[in-house]
Image (tube, rainbow, N blue to C red):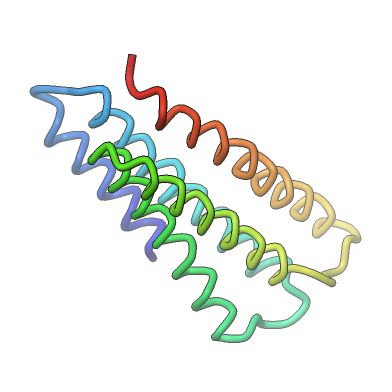
Length: 143
């Protein structure tokens, strides 16, 4: 649900900034939709389909909290120019990804699940690569 909420928030933010777009505003829209929304949905669906057993509520709560706190910190830090906040957010996102990988550990890699696992792993790797790139870009700022 939070992933859908982020995607909707990105759409609403797009409508708000459309008359006077800024580089940070356009970035925030894309970030909300892609990282907060689509990536969160993909990670959650991947875990739901790949976990060998239903993950413990505490684990899922920690995953959701880490992912959404990390995203909020990255957004707030970027929009306010507080790069240390962006760094904290990036670190928390990495923790969230580690918790998600933990949640699917031990699942069966055969048949259809193998392709789902590859897709899930590809999403995790893409996000793990994009986090440090985003941290560097936060320091450079919009050009």
